Length: 237
Figure 1 (tube, rainbow, N blue to C red):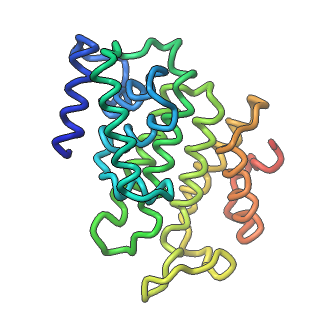
Figure 2 (cartoon, rainbow, N blue to C red):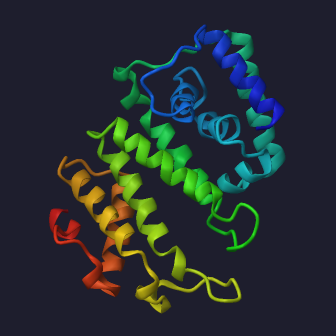
C-alpha cells in the first residue's frame, strides 16, 4: 500500500478512535464503508476507496474515470485535506447505516474490476483486481443479502468473469462475444451468476447493476442456452 494511502487510513482510525474487531468479515470491506462517509464529497468517495483501500494510484484511478491523472490526484488531495481539517468523525458504521453507503461501495468495487479489463493475460496484475473485486462483491452480497443491487453487482462480475477464458485470442486481442467459444466459458460461474440475479429480481426493485447483469444474461442465454440454470433469470425478470 502506498505511503499516502496508509497515512489516510491511519487518520481514519485515529478519528474513529477504534481498532477493535467489527462484525465485518474483511477489514477492506469495513474500510470501504468507512470511506463512504456522507461528509465526504460524493465525487471523491469512490476514488478515495480505490486509493486508500485497494491501493491504486492516481493514474489508474483517473483512467477508470476518464480524467487526467493530475486532475484525479488533486481531487484526492482535496478529499484528504477535508478529512484532516474538518476533523470528520469516522467510525465503523452501524448495520442500519450500510444501505445508505452501499451505492458508493458498489461503485468502487465495480471501478476496481474495470481497471483489470484491458489487462492482457500473463501481464502484471492481469487478474489481481478482478479477483479482488469478485471477492469483495461476494462479501457485500453476504453482509447485505437483502440488497438487490449488491446481488446485481455480484451477478454482473460473475457473468463477465465466466467468459474470461474466451475473451482473448492467442495474440492477446479481444474476441467479440459473437465469436467466442462457449465451451471455454465457466459453467459454474454462469450458474452462480444466474442464481444471484434471480435472487435480486425477487425483490422487485431494479437498479443499474441488475440491469447490466440482465443484459449479460440475455447474451449468454442467446449464445449458449444450455449453460443457463434451471431457474432462469430471464423468467424471473
